[in-house]
Image (cartoon, rainbow, N blue to C red):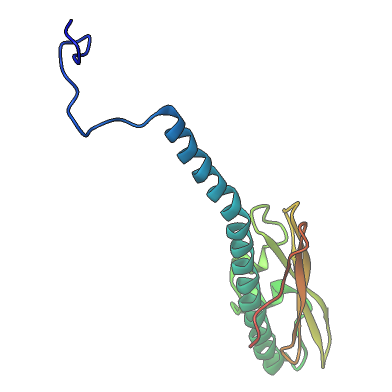
Length: 156
């Protein structure tokens, strides 16, 4: 074997070289750090999107209750009453019994001149709380996270 040749009889091309194991390890460490830092932000963004959807669903319940009131001169005491009139989506009406639903909707109280609808976070060990809407369309409440994050519904 002559000087400058490889054991396979070829000379390496000048100016080309591969990555060393150390360079690959450093690149992997940087990628892992970026992933570790971005996952909590992503999870918070996903939960905020769910809270935004809860706000939309509660506003739909509010509208449905107003239509129900026009027909019966009182607010509906149960979600099934609104579902019977086809005023709300089936997924909202059955959210309490659906194990995949992230929120359970219910009508907490209803009468001739008032109602309160509640969405309670379920199925999560990280997020908990509830959001409510009343007969005037006021949405109150928040969802809290185990890291001290607090998510609130968007303002109208």
